Length: 71
Image 1 (cartoon, rainbow, N blue to C red):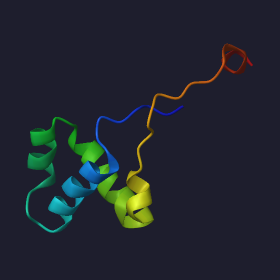
Image 2 (cartoon, rainbow, N blue to C red):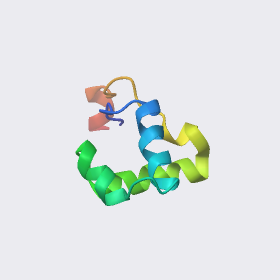
Image 3 (tube, one colour):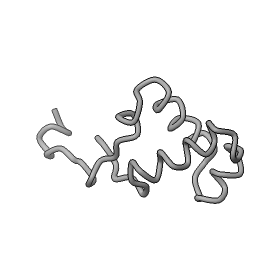
Image 4 (tube, rainbow, N blue to C red):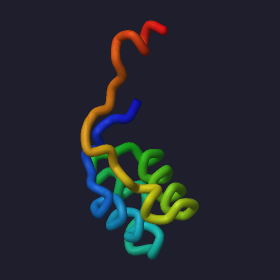
């Protein structure tokens, strides 16, 4: 199940590139945008291994039916 992200793909890319290019530290950037440092590190890893597709967000909360949950 996915969870709607607070950040768009473009926003994530902006913060990831800021860190990769050495313009700011991971810790400082994460603090500024209000996320955990490990989340930003995961975004960076996803970007480095999958490209921009690794930063794609879910447009809405996803869920499954009650029947699937109980199966």
